Length: 368
Image (cartoon, rainbow, N blue to C red):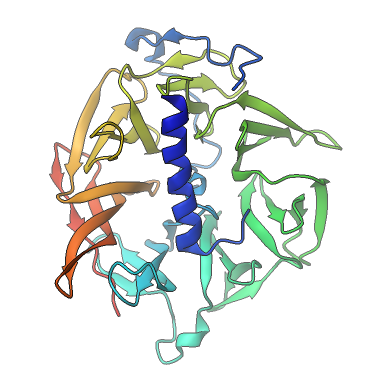
């Protein structure tokens, strides 16, 4: 079971790498997966710590490769998606868009529509402390300033992220570095580092590897990487807990230090994202060959409480994006449609109310 499900998850990551044209790249020695089934009463805590930065899209920074998409910037949601030349071809150009949170209208992100070249091709976007950052097709980090993107890194990187007021990246020669945004100079923290879906929580960098979840202590003068949760893949770190899967692929949770490991569900589900209150997930169908067309949510304080919040007809849900403070989810799904009298599969984006009750999903229309 574990091997089959992990293989499916890896295929999703591989697809994301191909779509985004990214620059990237069975033991249990510590009894990681020895745990008790969770009870609602035990985990209905009122005093849970808040995230390091409530406006930071922790979940979206742990999806796709390179990670980072659907960011709240100056009241609109900035995102990147592939605009296909021919439906179902998986060929075209990556474009930067804006989504109006109130109307659901999508427009191109370009302050000068008469100059299409003003916006370079991007493969990832991030917003940190009100500033917009992006990774361009040359694998350089950019910052939006005075109506244009300005390069702020002196070398090529696979991915980047912020935390504790600092900018971190994994370089093309596989080093973990901290970058000075003023001069673009890099300070090497670890020479050999290829982890992805990195983020900072409680003074540590957590990163995903093919062997499990790792962490790096940022308080040390010469930090070192340790494999923290062996075989945990995929994982989600929300700034206060870690969500991962046991050897039978049941969703579990533990504290940031690895303590209090507990199983959250007695059925196989695939976690897609989270916010302060809920986990959002899909259920597998057809002997695990189909991730399904339904989006569900699970209460963090009461994991036994789940609710279906949306059904997308004739679709397979691939990603769910959460924008902090926004009352809707952005769901990416593969939809079957007809083109030139042939059945083709296209990726579409949908808006889904978080409140759910199997609400109707609204497809986003991308401008030409």
